[in-house]
Image (cartoon, rainbow, N blue to C red; front, side, top):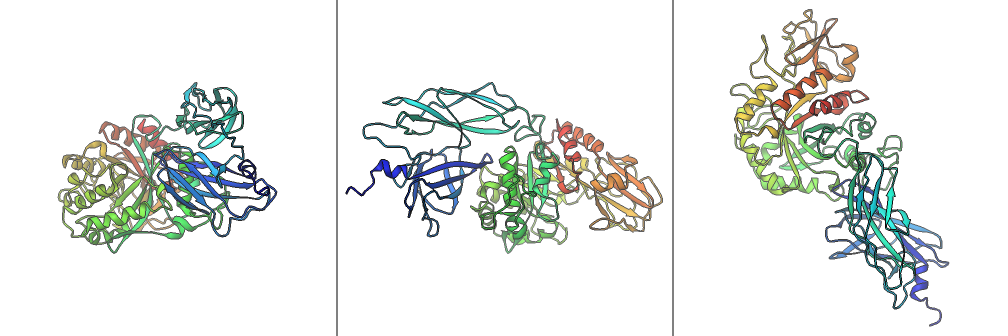
Length: 586
């Protein structure tokens, strides 16, 4: 028996430490590191801990994680259980909730390698920290002392699960923080025998400054949403470097497909398989070849960790992939279930805060024609809301055809609005070079004007019609295109001129990004609240920061919920269009 280690000796041979790798508000990524601090090889390891009732593991990697109620157990896999002296191994997990682990045991002993002394109880949990003197970069924390039968030695102050300081008193000022950012703090006491007790309740603190949370920087609750597409060279990091991330409130990730009555992956490689280098990555860390999630989804996860106010929705359909909606709504409950299962897949459930449905167009014609009937949009909306529940966002991108008997009249958008959080009203693409000979006209007119080619094809007409159908103004977002549409062979500078075809574009004739047009064909006139430009024989219409500002004033006067844009990559490298929306909504 003399060869067997006592519990204290066994505890001293290995440690397990916990850090919170990232936190995006609705969830977090946790990481445990097991280290062999002894002199003999460790052949297996088991880490146990307790979470508060509102916190749980949703998925894990490099360990088998199970639980019994609030008690969680992680066991090594076949390949990573053996640790030589001095070696360490890590495993990770995604979690939900805001709690921190407590009562950690490694192979049945304290995770910190401290001793367990018979008759010496571990400390109690300190009081929940209170925050004061909050600035852009610091916060003062205070808490009630823990109790212990032999006395308290010190306290570990934990920020987002990681220890940031060890102090002997019951106050601590954390500096070097980021403005406008959420942080979670808890405190763990250590007694004179180096035993740690349970963590205190967590306190969430938002530093001052920054972009605000869940609303535009003006703090008036207006939504500033942008579409992020899963094609092209634009990356999630571009949202950071342009300054747009701190100004937007929501992102619609486009697109997922609708096939065989189900929501399906749009582009697996772009969505979650592509690896990013350190230079391309939001946090400056390169993807590992074997990490469980890569691609845009992982980059969006990292974005939410840095900008926790941003909510992200997965958008399904779009112009090309709307053809599957008609079949899908024949069994709305099964359709909603398939979408829920995909959005809430454990690999990326923490990334998304809801679903956006871009059906172009219910009971009308887009790339294909649908004959589902006027009630189909409401049937789909009700099924989605029933499945996704009140805690997820459920939205839709819809037509802006305000003409008499047009696409808004073809479907029950008023009834469906009861289940949708809001509509992204696509108030752009009213006119373009699909009418090759013109007449030239702004593709995103705010109001009507003399000579407009089609009555009802304006933002004002669309919003008025939707309101008349019972859609609350706060559930309507005004659409802004970050691109222009243009013709060539045009001699007349004013709108209404004839053309010979579509103007040359970088990717497609008749369309060009704002970031290109602002220099290649600067605006030299305005009509119906939007800008136009005549340069050589080309004629373009597009929105500028000035016209966006006017449109945002109009949207606020109408009581709209905010605005959205299609899509981020058309903006300049310093995000001047996103900035114009944010400033205009203040």
